[in-house]
Image 1 (cartoon, rainbow, N blue to C red):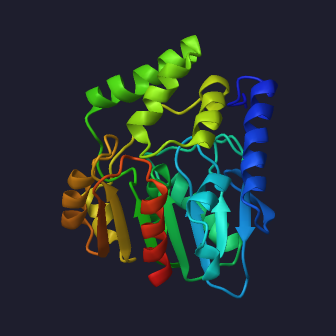
Image 2 (image 1 turned 90 degrees about the horizontal axis):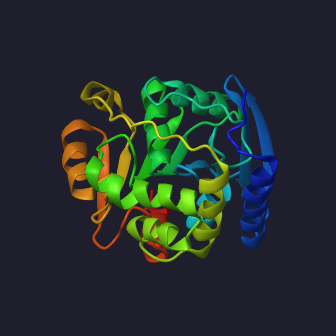
Length: 285
């Protein structure tokens, strides 16, 4: 299988930043490398094994250390399993799964079974939300509750706005390596400046073959089959997965929707203040 990294140099640059971020967190952790039918999956485990399990799933073009930084206090109540999503710029296998079928659900449920976890809480951001919803559709028997922040797979934004504000600046950065295009991209999606995201994505865009497949949306019948309590956090200024539109559809299609939170000033990627609000929601569950 051809590597998703465009060069060994690029891979090394990206994984150096991964390690740098993990070291900056100054946490006690251990790696678990789980062999699955879809490829080896790297998981960073944090916290006490006597506490209930919580799986966190990062977004597209991300990695587990970013998810751990986003929600730094959850290990007070949970043992955290931060998953490196397959075919993303991280330490898991480069197997690209289909977003159309239930491959992501089969993969996560295989991990849950191999880790021998029960009554799992799950939290996911953006593409991580799609992965969690696919998990629930495929088999929700081991899942206690889920928290979805600006998730993919419920609604999509205007493709023309995404083209001009996200994809064209990204492509211009890739072609010219001019920072102004990367900054335009980040300003559209991030609620506050993030130096690590700037450094990491500057390498990912240049050295990693990203997945530009269209994001599907969950069918009403699939949503209605889910029994697991869902807390949905949406961002009002999110142009990828618009918050108001998402709340309206979620209220119509999810019978197990337990709670919703609208972040009034948030773009797609939340700021630290809003991430703290999300953490409090999870810690109260």
